[in-house]
Image (cartoon, rainbow, N blue to C red; front, side):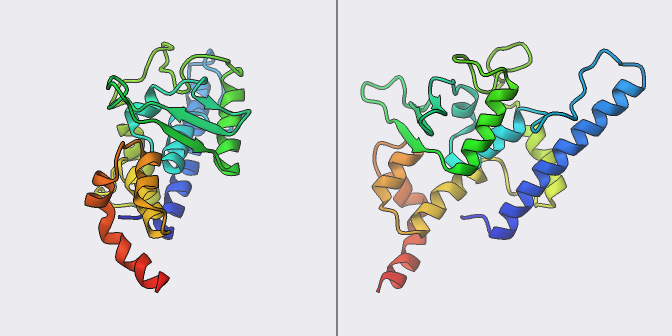
Length: 206
C-alpha cells in the first residue's frame, strides 16, 4: 500500500530527530574521554543512513541496489539515476532503472556528495572501511528512525519501495511504466501486487 501523508511526514521527522540524536551522542563522547572523535554538528547528514533513506523514498530502489550504487550511476550534473538492479544485472537482457531526480532529492544527494569530498567514482554509501555495506546494515538504523517517528513495527524499510510503486499506480501511471521505473522487465509483478489500486484511478478517469 501507499504510505499516508502523515506516515511520510513522520518518517522525515524521524530522520531529523535521528540526526540530532547522533550529534548529541557524539558531543557526549567527545566530552567524556574521546576528544579524538570528529564533531558532527557541522554536518547536514551525520550518518549515511539519512540520505540512504531519502533516496529510497524518492526512487523505490531496493536496499541492495542502494548499497551498490556508485557515483557514475548517480549523475548529479544531469539530475539522473541509471542502474541495472542487482536481481537482473547478470541476465542476458537485464532491466534498467532510469530516473530523473527531483529538486528535493537532488539537494539531499548533492549535499551528501559534498560531505564525502565530491568523489567522481566509488560507492555512494560506502561502509566505514570504504567497502560495500552489509545487506542488513540499514535495519537497525531504520528501526531507530521508525521508533522516533512513532510508526508501527509492520512498516519495514521495504515499505518505501511499496509506497513508491503504489503512488505511481494511484496517479494513473501506466503499469508498464511503473515496472520500468521499479526495475522490472514486464508489468506482471506490478499488476499482481499493485493492481488493486487501479480501480480508484479508473473511477476518477470516468
